[in-house]
Length: 333
Image 1: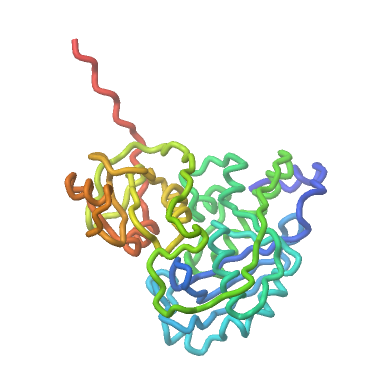
Image 2 (image 1 turned 180 degrees about the horizontal axis):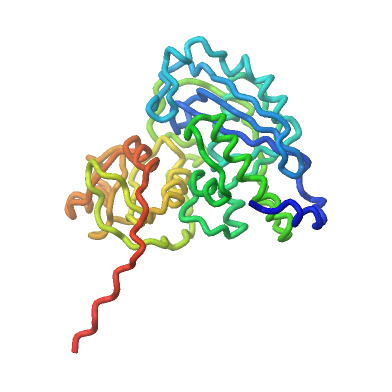
């Protein structure tokens, strides 16, 4: 932990926000039409000190999704308030503050959609992702999971994937991160929170992979990815976890925004490949019978194939890479 005496002697940056709302939401899934099942907020002052906290269950009005992760069954959620019923309390805790979350683009997108369904607007205009902040601070983390950030600052997790405990853990890890940034004069990676102005729950069964933000075509500009720091351990084996360093390719439409899915894979320590080759560990596709170049190559090479749902579950428990990197073969004499 950072010693408060260090930052006490340092002038606090005038450009820093005056308050933060550290948020965590548990959801029925990761797609555009998924819903929030629980939410927690820790309010912090300008220097990251906890002011209060709040937690609520939310009736998603649908199947609760991965109960084995968040532990919230249909029976537990049946008597919970609808999001529209708690939107006012949620707003009180967000009002005038920067929303802080781990992988904030996901939490914000889920919150913004719930507010839009309730025909309201969340009163927050900026967000801060603690993954982005840890990168700005160059923290020596093995990956960008919340448990790794918590371990770095000596914060003990008690109930992983419980919104209140995850928000507490993040609040405790954010405070020393904030003080380190202030001490070193680091600009906080603040992004705009753009609220949705309308929402429609139809059609009832949306097309897999429908991404209106991409426009009419399916073309997306490629993004330069950082090199994967881990060696490729080989192909994925069914029934076993993914290993850091595995090369993963995607083909076809995805219900989760493709860039978000790829970012999650990279944060877990995987290598996102733009094509399928003999060294590809896994192909992720919702349509394995489609005659795309990637699926055709995967079949010819015997590359394992899983759908998006199975892949997102595998992402929750990626095994660490081996510490040793294979040495190059000796030159022939």
